[in-house]
Figure 1 (tube, helix red, strand yellow):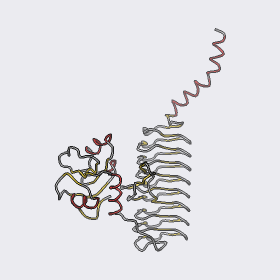
Figure 2 (cartoon, helix red, strand yellow):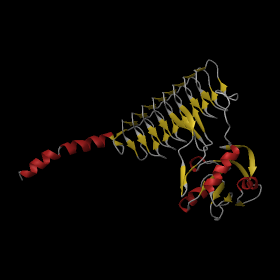
Figure 3 (tube, helix red, strand yellow):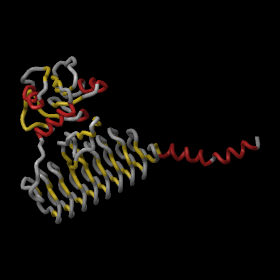
Figure 4 (cartoon, helix red, strand yellow):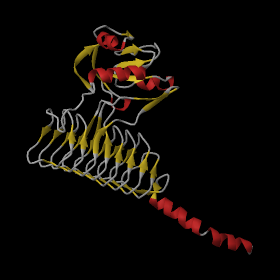
Length: 311
């Protein structure tokens, strides 16, 4: 998430009431999670296990809960609670705006696009040309939709990320300030839910087709010409490369990559990254050839046991 204009390190520290290490005028361009940070971004870290990863990342400003040696060319914001202060910054730069109309005045809708009754279209939404949005679709603020996109009834684009910190008093949500971006020629079925990025984008690539009742987690990126069948659940921060096929009721863990042209059979459980160009099934998902071979061996166990009786 980039700020509307460049801020200084001192200005950011005043927003969250923190101390800092670095020049007062050190430039701050935005804020992002660690997997999408760029120079000029703030990244937060609140556990020693991840200090090195944050300090060595592309981010040039690290919001951290301990004063450590500051790498050359970077700056630190010292906070007793980086998670809380990251939320403060999101609320400051991307505050919640109430809606007073079903279609916001700031929404931009392209030529020959049809919006069926009972849809909600939030602030700063952009919808391209020749789209068809069926009844009861909810499109949250800042969502970007390309041309020739069809979205069926009851689908929700842009709900908050499922991202919480477990505190003694209960779960504390990391506030989402990112977007959903749907590219050209995408088809999204009924009752799908696609969460917005925390600070970046959740992306549905050009020409991809989603069946009904699919959940896509925050900051996940789906490539071009992917096919995803009903009741698939994709966690946050997953990269699905081009021309991947995922059949029904598949579930995935977060932070993995599914390679181009992979095929994942129904009810598989994806617990780690999968290479492209192969077919997978099972829980956890394994290459189908190896799994079939194992099943052949298992079926032979009664025969082998019978043979052992006569030895």
